[in-house]
Image 1 (cartoon, rainbow, N blue to C red):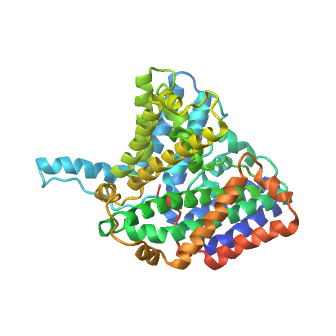
Image 2 (cartoon, rainbow, N blue to C red):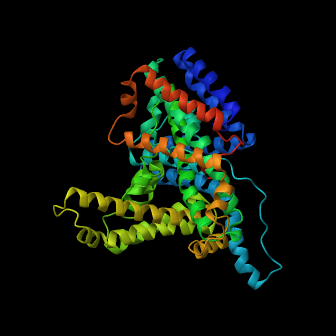
Image 3 (spheres, rainbow, N blue to C red):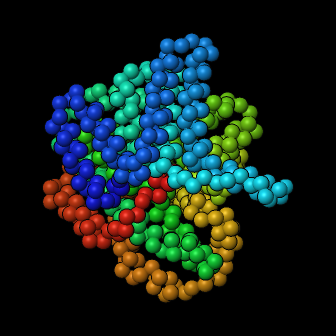
Length: 482
């Protein structure tokens, strides 16, 4: 079920009202059934894949907790193999076969391996990583094995974050399903406000930007120069508004019922370095890779060369996690390369810019602007490989993006549409004002302190834009494909 659908508009209030109406002891079952219904709106029988891994991980967690020595390790391995195996079959089988057949074709073109005609289950990478974090945390002794099968199943399937995160840790969420959440007016208002904001970013900004992005990126060879630059910048904001919009709706819908999910975005495009960008972008995934891959590889405890290697491996895997295609791997490798170069030149950068030597405040301001601009440009350039449909398209765009424009500015405005362009500008201004107000502040508390007419005036403005100018074309959230 899509958050930006009529079905969810009916589903959400019914599920929420029933949640508060039911006695506490039945609420977990209600949420589990609701989550099953939510997921079944995509491909119903794929829910069996979820139950397969849930059953294995549930018993693996108990086995890990009860066992000692090598038996604990074997239980963990069984769980990880089951989860990664499901990913390998549904997400990466055809990718591996395609690469293998490329080599095999040169040897014997008549004995190529067959492809499987299978559809990737929605959100498979997200709930797989969440399930893996459970058994790893039990193995590390940071989480007790969950004995209540229904509660554990709900941990994996909790509908607000089932499809596209945030990827939670068991110690952050499991205990909340045992807590009794009474109706809290402030939490309900705060949650609905966050959902409204997320919907605004998705249907008013992201889906409107997507129209021009799709036009250019689906036929990149028809363009060069300015159209490619604008489409790339548009996609940079499209993916942010799309994914952070989903996260806002997920956090908001959970908050209405009293649940607290982790923050997944923190104004990432205001970052002044690539490392800072990854502390602000898709926080649940970046911390997952840090805790479960980078640190086990040695983290910062090894030599500098090994650190660089570990970072590069982590981002290569991150690229592959996002999609079974080489252009995703290149996107991840670019970010790994950025981080390594940034780490190598860190002292040189500080020396050149004068940070830390008592520079004047206005000099520091321009240093931040320069660093922020460079970071944004590097991130936007890497997004080319993320958005391109093929490696060939990505290479074409990088080779032709700075050539003389294939279309005049007037033609580009016509392609975007004047009304859409005005709405994009207005929406951007609204978004940036809100993000500026978020700096070091509790925005909810700040809004609550305002007079009622100001609060409701802002709500009605956002609702008006959503209802009158939202793009409703059954557009999935971008990260559903992962």
